[in-house]
Length: 179
Image (cartoon, rainbow, N blue to C red; front, side, top):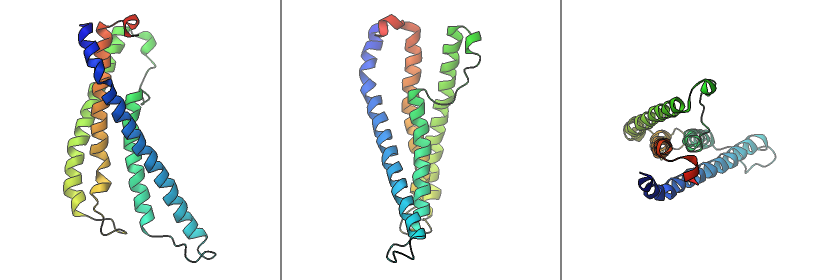
């Protein structure tokens, strides 16, 4: 069985690659959020001093859309890093096997949530989202407002597959053998 895990560990770089892509997306969106918000605030506050600097109407909708992407994608990153909200208050009273089983159960539940987010979010994005447009950007489809949900669902699925695999591996490979 350890040979199976050794061969499966070779695809870890795919998980690392997905993590890096999601992180870069979040960083770019954060920078865009800061720049757009700064521009909007400067346009509102300094309009009488710098007349060519206006507050365009599109800034609020774009900032909110960027925030939606960052919120759900950062939640997916938290799954990968194991920093998502979890109840550990009773772990000291349970044996290690029970904790591992509960961790797997938790990961299966989050995996299921990711599947639902991917399926339902995609359906919303291509139906409701594709029929509407941003109020201040009439040329831009609202598809982009709904798209963060299936995108994060896909990232959650990928990261949960890795988490479940690592939990199952922990049953067969001892800590000394992992290093």
